[in-house]
Image (cartoon, one colour):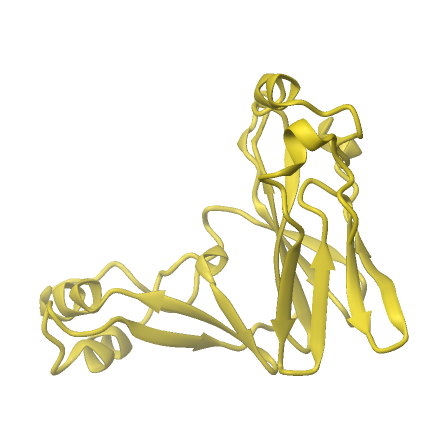
Length: 191
């Protein structure tokens, strides 16, 4: 992918390349509004991010300089961070919406083509923020939870989650020094 920025700015803005399920490879320029699927036939536009409803900046331009970049860091931007599984994609714009606060992650359903916001209350049965996922595999998203957190929660008499028994079951036998635990989520279409 050719550098879309000025030489002065572009050195630190290498394209993002992500691979999912060993068959889907995606690439996008950082600070671009388009994510491309890389195939043997070429690069196919797969996702387009529209930040105009929140006055966001979807594309940086050829005249971008470090000074101009610094001046717009408080705007809503998209730096190419996303995850995809067989049914959903999660996009992470950066920045704050004026008078609202942080911009939530966006959950996109491939089936219905609808977008949903993952607000701070979007949590799993264990009370872990859905937006904390870091990996994807087939139809699941995966998050990494430090063992000490599960260990501590399993020892509490009252755990503020919907399924404390499950939390205790997962945390049983863990110590605070164990390796992190991978939690796999299968999401359903929001109602």
